[in-house]
Image 1 (cartoon, protein in one colour):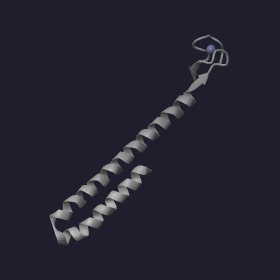
Image 2: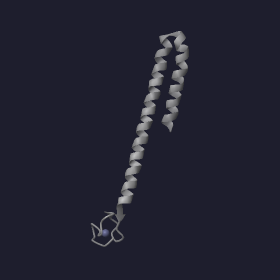
Image 3: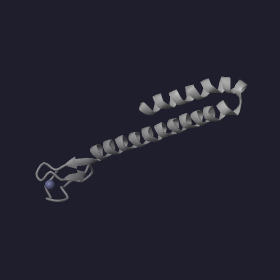
Image 4: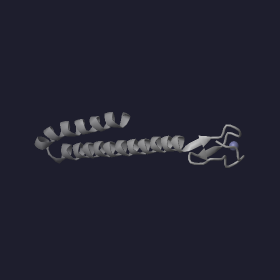
Length: 91
Ligand SMILES: [Zn+2]
């Protein structure tokens, strides 16, 4: 969420500078283009972070749903397992 604010800020200032840059010349166009590029990088970073976060949440959920904890020894077993892999107790 921090990334999105930064991205919007950079994109906004980049576009804001681009308008006078059209009159002043390259002295303003170059920094404004740089700001827009940085903004786009932030957008890309944000989507990457979100993707990684979603993936880890999915993996955690998958692990929680697939694994069954043994009532005797506490070790994690597959949901399909009929007996505990470490102590042999029926699940
Ligand atoms: Zn067990």
